[in-house]
Image 1 (cartoon, rainbow, N blue to C red):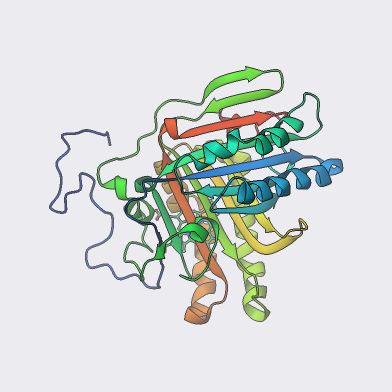
Image 2: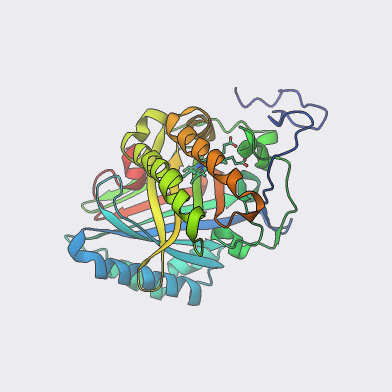
Length: 348
Ligand code: HEM
């Protein structure tokens, strides 16, 4: 499929038709976060510290301090704290994921003295831990979310203006693309490779290629007890863990540039029962192919289809995701003292 301006539009005005089957009625309800029509974009930052055992306290201090700064001085609309036991370089990470809806607000934060002081303090050569920031300016016409529970506030949902009624465009393969408004006219073909913008002894600044797909896909078992909890951890979590390990260790086979199996942590750095996968794919088609065809996501999907109907609307566990497809100019990432292969460095 190529992005051609003379591709004919269908009756609904789309150049690329929906994959939703005619007369489709989804078998279970799902919802999307909504933003004011006047909003054009939101910024999302994945900023963290990569460390080995001895440096855990320093890493946690850096990232939790960054969350405080982002919320207080940086005027972030939301920032959360998570950790990863083993990234693609075999190291651990604490990560802040922050969202800014106001244009330029993130840039002001990055320029602030408070941010610069903290960043520079952890940027010296030969420090045993690394720091990084992966910065995405997300055009909202290239963004979609999906929530099993409309009241579940997580990630960008903390900053949303509204939530939809139950939607039709879900529960069939291709529904993720159908939920992204710009997919009507844009096939989001990938182009270009990761470009190094600046490089010094311990630092790399880079820009990924056109149409990188970013997904945060989560499952919240907080407050879930008894049989549902046992079955989730017995049947679903093991295949989820295997899928995340495949994308992290063999992701190149499916054009996944990086995957981290993350868990939200509390203010002391203790793990919660709420996990998510954070993955970067070369393109939306690559993410679609993995989810629709690869045995690792199909195993997750099928385990869930066995598990969920036992509970139906009484199910307490909650599921969500956020997906964006990004122009190259909307992305930049910086790694200081990080191991080779960390994050988007894996694509070099
Ligand atoms: C779609 C289950 C984890 C990627 C779906 C759907 C289900 C599902 C039921 C269909 C949703 C709908 O449209 O109503 C699960 C469960 C997970 C899980 C139970 C964890 C316990 C993940 C992770 C990723 C992922 C970690 C990626 C990092 C996707 C994608 C789709 C999808 C991209 C959309 C496919 C499309 O619409 O074309 N998954 N999944 N999933 N999942 Fe998963």
